[in-house]
Amino acid sequence: MQLIHIYHSCFAAVDEGYLVVYDYWQDPKGTLHALLENALQSDIEVFFVVSHFHTDHFNPEITGWCKEHEGWHLIPSYDTIRRRRIPREVPLAELRPGTRVETPYFTLKAYHSTDVGVSTVTELKEGTVLYHAGDNNNWYFPSDELPASSRVKITAEQMDKLYASTLREIKHDYPVIDHAMVPVDHRLGQEMMRGPLQFIQAIEVHYFHPMHYADLSALLAE
Image (cartoon, rainbow, N blue to C red):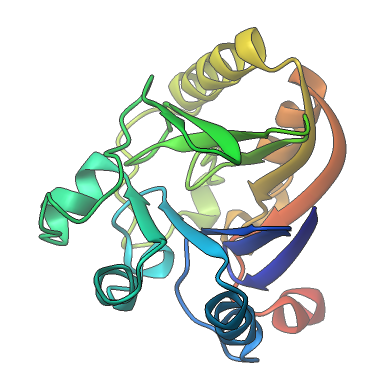
């Protein structure tokens, strides 16, 4: 299995016979489109997993693609179906915390998030375990860096407890994760590593993949 970062929070897990795409938004380098073209030519099944309805995690194009191509499947969260008005006959499954989806290639389970939608764990048939956070993170904004548009309505202590609760839930089923895709959001300033560090302290992770940044070069330049 090869895990490829596409852009922002989008990753593609590529293996023989299938392709799993998490939270597709944009594809500035054409990487995903090349993978999808290969999938068409090679008759590979494609699964689009959507953690929640936020614009930077969902591109409505994928709904049309799944209608158009046999063997292409949409697996969105419940709020994405509702907020983006996806016809209910299109998705292969509707993700809510606790939902389990079985395919010939992998098992996917949805978990709670500290934001909207879900986080997910995908266990491939050969045993590799992948975690995609969606927007599940410790959204701890220092008071002097709190965005004017922020909708954070809970205290830092409450956020800590909420995030810890989601990690316990995941660890109960998967104490070891091979690939963890976790937000490292520079808007959190000096606290941007708070959630990621709590994740790897709670759960054994073999490979950590930062996400939720649109442009890594801009992040490193700050």
